[in-house]
Length: 154
Image 1 (tube, rainbow, N blue to C red):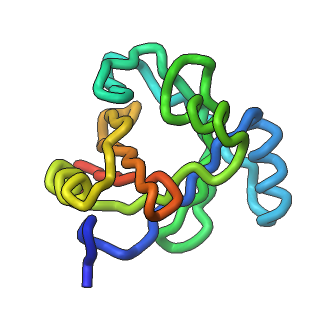
Image 2: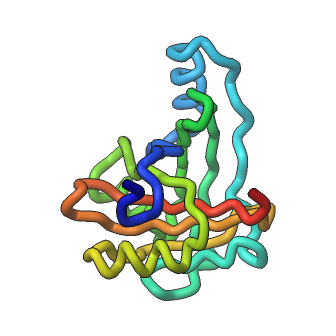
């Protein structure tokens, strides 16, 4: 059964961190992997970040990714000081697991399905290279944020 978002296959676990450089080195050492490059989220002209229903051109973060399985990724996110789901999480809860993500098709439908089940879209935007989109949904009953990822070319 595919559930609310059309899949039950976890694609990513995302952590909010204060220092992506130090944290990625610690994870690389722990996992026995190469230290990945740090990536900026990208320019607002492409990302079109929306937070709590409002354009958020100043919401910004730095990210590092580890591929830890055939279809599973660990993401580290260091937010800037401007309002975003990342900054809010860091201020309210500190560092730690921010979201679990699922790769979906037709994210507009999947977001609508999730909202019909009581989840609330709090932030969304386009990947920095324009190749897909992300949607963060608050899921109080699941005790986390659920992220829906859609890659346009796959």
